[in-house]
Image 1 (cartoon, rainbow, N blue to C red):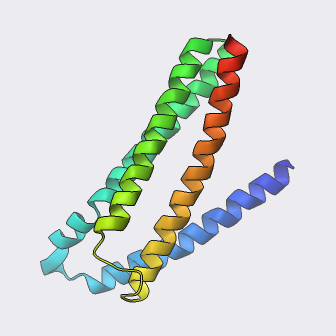
Image 2 (cartoon, rainbow, N blue to C red):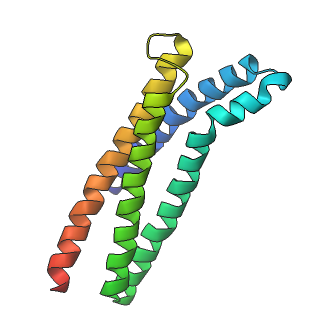
Length: 143
């Protein structure tokens, strides 16, 4: 089971790496130095989502450390922070879908952008459902 989980994570990482690599390769070819500021305006939401996900990994890791130490209140707080950060990420992901410069049928880049962000949003949604289940069981065990 442990090896299967590791292989699943490896395959998911390779899918994301290949899709985001082709996206950034296209963006670097399409964006000249004179329009570099447009690239940073377009990439503002994905970069903020990156920072949000990095912070969520810290709060989730602190919840794991607190559960090992036996501090249930702090673990509940860390999981609640991680869940709220996950919801914030999904809201920003939805905003990126609504206000993106690409449409799904505009070009190769539009379909690739929607596919990668949708796949990643689905990944975060499934992880959020697992965290909600863990939060529910933690609340039941702490009562």
